Length: 509
Image (cartoon, rainbow, N blue to C red; front, side):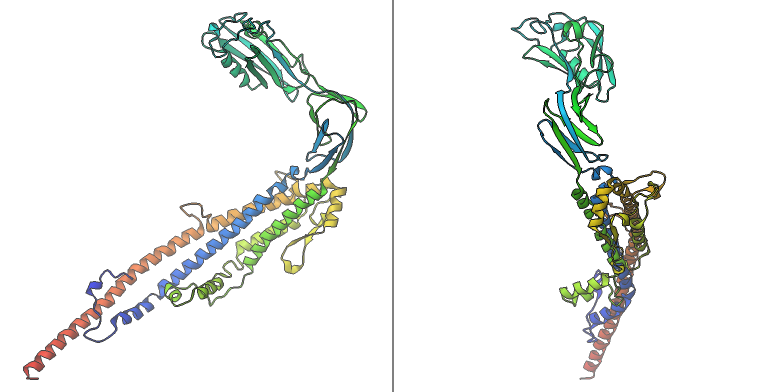
């Protein structure tokens, strides 16, 4: 209690009583309601910490396993090329095992490129170069540009379509580099730059391949003569990659292309056969599935531990007075038991556990008839009853499933339907359940990252603190009232003693 009025307190000189001790004992009884509220607040604070800790465990599961929802996670292939200097390969999620022979590669795909075709360079003089940062009308070109004009560039894209852009210029305000910058930022897949060494402008397409509608780089001076007349650029075409694969001659726009889910990259021409074998990396996929199961089991184990934790009802939060009379180790041991069971049989936690277990055992609907559609069907089952939902992997069965039906195994984890959640794969279901649980726990106990805690626990803790503050004021007033009464008693006794002394003195004592 506050000692704000201690100057009015006496210590029992007249009565010989231990007033300080008496008031302390009286206040101990008065503080019982406050201690109960403080204990409630402490237990709720501990419970809040326990829920937030579980939320961190659940978030860790999400962060470390959310990729299991994606087909790309399972697109692991071991590819071997008989000559990796000529052809390389890598798998994609839709890939399949294969052996491909590139009997010959007669041409690589190239981009369209054009450069200044004026003898002596842009200024027509091999001994000098222009300044690309000077205004166009202040630059000496072999062929001077018109004062203003527009030009259009139509370029082949990587998907085989074309994109075009019309660009205007004004020689009184534009430099060559400014015009080239507008070309580069036009979003049509064309790169242009000034080559000082050759006193030349170089322009090329970012995409490779032969044009599908005319040449792949088409230039037009609409008004003026800047592109063709002044810069000396011309229409240009790229080339397609040409090769024979498994005895069939074919072409591709790019040197990198996909066949049956395997991405091949041609690096150089050859007349010698190159064999590329792609095999699914079953060991790599099993490692990922094991990690997923381990993290699920770790999360579920922590949740089961909390919901089944024993409750020690005789161990309540200690008051400061009680702590002062105990050893540190005794305090730790006491509070360990006092904190035990705070989430025992908690309904929200139990529902989360039940939901996760239900999702893990569920059937993935919507898959083809006869297809693998449960974790159980690919070798992942639950352990003993006492394991409380722990998943166990039969690696032999899982390996066989991956070897014989890899696409079906992948679908068990990754299948997705935006309108029917029963058709979602197990990884999707657990991901959603875990996120829903985090949201419920956050609504219950807050996240700890916000200054203002609007969770249910946060509101309750605020109420407890308000009650504690009110009780502290009430008890301070009560303590002062006790001291005032004892002070009055001491004053009266002191006065009586003085009167007795005076009477005895007058009587000649």
